[in-house]
Image (cartoon, rainbow, N blue to C red; front, top):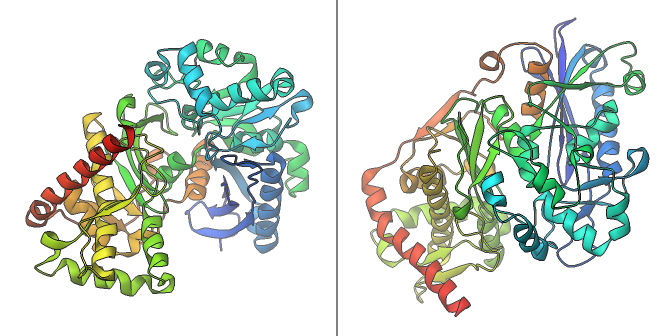
Length: 500
């Protein structure tokens, strides 16, 4: 509930599986929230697509639920923020209508086009600070040009998912710096579109949205939408917003240099804010703009974090028994035989991103013996995920973006044993926040507050209270060290055998 007359702010997060809407008051207490499901189409191997109009329909549905549940608070709406899945290629033709389904971030069809893009612009990685990957937007445009030339010829505008929603809400084609960083068209250091990169994919600046900072006003709710939402005559600002990880960082107060989070979700992310541009593309660091002016971030990504634990639970036939499995792994870790006898696990069940950018990398157990049971296997899986985070922190460190006291968020944060293990192997003090999730919708709402002039970054983007701190233990770190060396050597040996 909000006090009568208290202004409210709406965060809209356009995800892959759902649209989430979150209404907060000026005190940032949640007034109401709602989600609308989305489906993904996979018509061919490696393809992943969505109908852009489904995103807007999801926004309308989720917002309608909030209006029903909190009509008086919604009537006090003073600002809107957007966040969303990154990299999606939304190709628009005449009258800004989609020409085909959007090609999503997890679509892998454009491997050949990545090589062609690099052939056309050999210094693309220097210009953007990032490797060219099939998930990014520019290679998808080359794929369309090669395989659907009529669509490419008819394309008048290319937008990212959340920016298509903004277009439908306001009539304005605008993006923010953080989301644009994942296109392979942005000069991330200078925070501007690169003409040569656009030309290499058959585009010009005319096809691109105007760029703003995530905390700036990008547009206003159109009179038609405002009327439909019961806000007739109101001029509601829409913030630039942010890509999902940048918005999540805003949601947990990661705004100052060195601040960040480690997300132990299905995939794993180490996010670290900087006050300068940093890049290390040869080690698969994501170097993106943050959703705030004069801020950037480095990000390491592992593809199978908590999903590795779910996988081993399924293999063991104990999907509903995760708590007991983790307790068994913790007991095993405290035994004298753990470091000496436990198998070593590579968590590359879907390939790996940082530091190898190796889609062909595979998961494996090494050192299995007859005496190993579920406790040893689960311990090895959790340790392997922690070791992958250690690799990510090493990359951030090498780039000059080592985080300081990152927050632990995501489903895996429920395991204090895992949080302590990650602290031990990375050498970082990691804070567990009270009830914190990497909430992109909250970050979007906070950006809406900033755009509406509801406070400073320091006042709005506060860090949640710390529930406990995981301090690295030097003795445990010393016991993990030889196993970490073996873990890294295993990957190199497997890659050498695979590529011989």
